Length: 420
Image: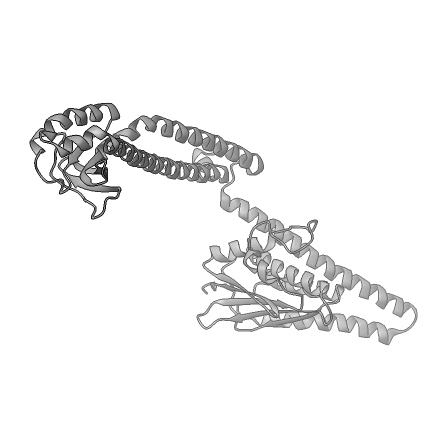
């Protein structure tokens, strides 16, 4: 097996898909953790500024200093001590009209406060751009013992400081991301190993072809078995009638058998570009329908083109659709019937339509009927959940489409026509 084949195998594709999916998931997870860290750091900054500002505003000496002369000389050392101990970027104490009494930059003392000063004596937390740049700040009113407003205190942390607080958390985020990525890659390798045990180094297309081949052989075999069984029964009956000397009845049975088969053969042969494999399948399925007590109708337009499908894929598509229809019709109430139509579309494509008299598909299940592994049949039914998923895969791979409608239950596949 060449290295190129290994790289394009289904197992390698499974590994790549799982690994890429895990990597994308890890990237999203890491982004969410960083955003959560930013949110937590901002919330912490809001809580710290609120607590520090409220504590300063409640100190009696702060209100007394604002009421007397030389407030800046007494309060600037207090503000600097708080900034160093509480790990905040600025503490600005100001008069009721917003004139700074303290500031990180002493040159700014005596200038107006840059930020929101509430109209009422309430606490306000905001993000504002001041002399130190964007910052999260909380402003708290300072009341005298008499209850009068004597000033404001604003405590803030710059956005840059909040961002730097995230840096110590990055190793933890990176560790989580690497752990998830490692687990995902191990899972991808296990998935590749499991797939290789089942499919070897076969490409994905070959696996689908193998499934299609199996489905084709199965459905064609069932059709031929039914046809052989039907002809065998009629031949045994005819031989018995001949032995009894009832020649006319024997001839009628053999003639009827020939006439029914010939009618379908004539329809298939009348097509301008018929597929003999599909024709043989239809003959067998007609016998299978009669065997199961289902009325069979095949309407094949002579102008219907041949699809671009290979014989194997064509048998898979037509055979699976007819098998589902026969199962549904046989399980339903009388009259039981299946109708198969081959016709050209207005744009020169082939339309294959299979309808049946079965009970249909429940409303809540219609979106799932083409999913791999889903089936409305009993759990022990052969090929459970494979047929319709395979049909859709084959049809869509040609650029065609398949549509489901009811009542009656109808599957219509549109396929590109083979060029002459």
